[in-house]
Length: 469
Image (cartoon, rainbow, N blue to C red; front, top):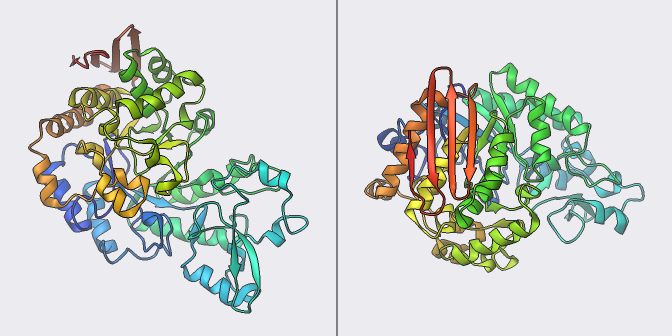
């Protein structure tokens, strides 16, 4: 099924039921009219990061099901798959073969050895300092080969996620085959995870390196479009980068909206939210929550620095069981620019403010994505987080099919579903339509128009009351 202008659910294969079959049953039973598409978070065999360290792309993790289950789901809902263009698992056959055979490995070109990358085999401290990195040191692991030798191999994220050399033909062939296979299994959209890290060049920050990054993006787009799929580069950074991508006609994420909505609801003003809603593109996917934390870096310069600091503190002071330590190294959090919490708990588990947040999202430009925990108005799962000591697991509760059924008894869950169904069915939300926004003190009015159709959200940012006209 091709991408269409209906709400996309974000979920793991085993988070709304035990596997893909149960997920499909749950959606058909409870959300047939509320959900148009499903972003199935990585369902391939993986060694870490809950799927984001894929060992291969030609199999479905047997705990989740099979490609047949994926394809059946794709007949009822358009699908998004993840392609980790920047890295592959350290437990993959590709990297294991490299460790075994080193320079004689058929996959040696997949990986970036420091001795080959840096002019003198090692970066200077100045070069290390320039790199946009996720660790307080140069991004590498010390790989030990079967012959007893050791070498530094590029590794941006955790030790299970080994970076790929996307400039080599061998890797390009792998990318092409992977994209084609994904399309063959029903992918309507392919999300390019960690895309901005994929190009590395000495004496740069190794993040969104132009013009090379555009060459990679167009290469992947050409492959996907030939098989009737769209691509979605995933980038958490200053809003000007996704806007630059948007101007070249690509889909982007609106990762700024979550914090701007929180700021509006915490501080009872739509001043900054209005400016963003008027400037962001229609060809985007909006989010309030995802499998990661709530991103702060995405609102740099959309909110003044003092307002960013303020809203971060408000998340901790007004949120329900949202603590700074949950976003720290104590809970294995690498992304210090993200706050780990469910969106519902960030709003103090307050049904009124949370429902208004969703209404604002659904009236914003673009196609809304709703994370499964958010769709069920889930509170912070501190029990799971304490068990795993992974801060992000606070927002990754495992719902059984029975739990999803029970959640339907909550008014807030039913109200969210009703809003989702409205967003999917009303013609004024057409992506070729128009949006107008008024923000006066604590009053916010958003109007969407398309041809003869019109729909308006009138909201009070102090009381959280709203009407849809």
